[in-house]
Image 1 (cartoon, rainbow, N blue to C red):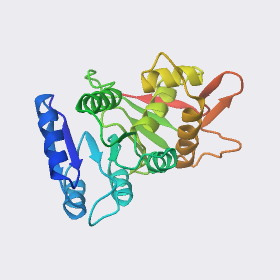
Image 2: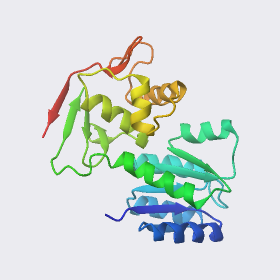
Image 3: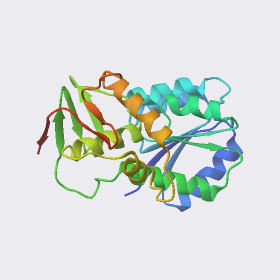
Length: 234
């Protein structure tokens, strides 16, 4: 399968280098060098992953990120000169999944792209249709979406992964360590704060009460589990 990647980068020299590298890795890349053309591509096409520069001559990259999130749960990797932890947190809070600070190596870029696609395509090999109903929501593992009243929730790929793990394994309690290892694919370390931040945002998007959550329950001393009935639909 050849993955489609949208590259939004105003520096054409950097864009050409990224395109050449990803082309060698058998990715199909469409490049946009300004905000206007980026908006058109976002609204007209679907992509498996987006590489987004936050600093564009005619657009706010964060506005583009919000537009992407309204239409897709595809992973978004920010590529930008912004490097402070605060700026990274702001970017990730708006729905980005990863962050690369310029200058970066093409080896690192390819590794981040492949890791993001592996996470979102976890169920790609199955030929069956799996839809899970919980509360007023439907989680569809075929198109990687969560809907309520036929409206798609603007989840990031990591938020979707957290929810998918909890819904599919609805009879189990998952520790923060398990979630971190499963989603961030890192067996060497864990980061409770990262899990907490993503969990809070996920609950907010599900309209789950932050103080007394009903959909995603906190099992103190153990971890998290789905707190409502889950109905698997084939």
